[in-house]
Image 1 (cartoon, one colour):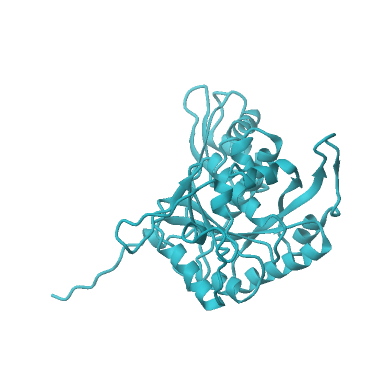
Image 2 (image 1 turned 180 degrees about the vertical axis):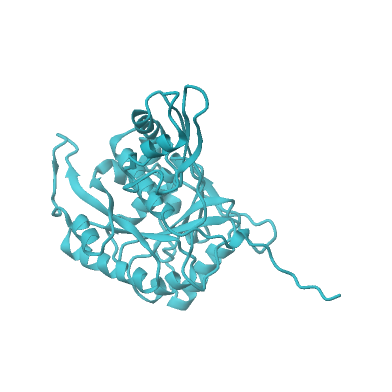
Length: 357
């Protein structure tokens, strides 16, 4: 091994394919320092997405490619470009919108578990509950009380399970209906987003309201979104609405990171039998039709519903279980897809001040 050169090491790394990006580590610029001094090559892999539970596997893949090498695997999340004409949000590197096109497909449950999975994988994460008419994140996160304000103008995010969270549900009674017209909803949502003092987030997951109407379109045009995730079930009706959500994001030039098929199978609580009660392959077919990817699928399991209703979502109530593993895989896949997008360098450019003598 002592005769290996840096070029030899890079040639080996070009053969290591990251399953989350489908590309090799050199092409995605995930290789940090390489040292070939002495008899043991040292390789530093720096992934662009949180991957705490995957790091040992990645290290093993590199070691199999370069026997005897010392390998370190870390993550570094950076800001990525948002749609043109919209300014990035202070304190937030990336906003990921979770949308469905219709209600009843488990979007909010997916959103909270996606956020918790990103956090479990090593990122700083927040959740914005954008469903003004039916806020559900306070109950799902088990957070009670009202947000505080240091200056009377901005809100401190609520906190639960290492997440920062904001929702209209923290400001009104849970059973009070929001009888507001579209413009009021949009204004309220913008205030919740921009007047919250988000603290150095790698990702802010936005649980979008269902549908593709005026409110959703306005949000997509005003909120600085780095990428979106479409949630559907295998049913044809749900897929029709999911396709509308995809086209909405496409029109406002927000990249769709991929599709998640929720309730893909039903797992019997008594015998463990798994079957496709809503059909099969719908999410994968939609992803193929629109040249995107299936980020993963989640079964219809009573424990997911019980956990969300009880304020203990699956990723925190059963962190090492098989369903949490699926959520973590979906989170890594989505963040890895985002990592391949163009980076946002606006914060690195200094302000130019012209002074007259």
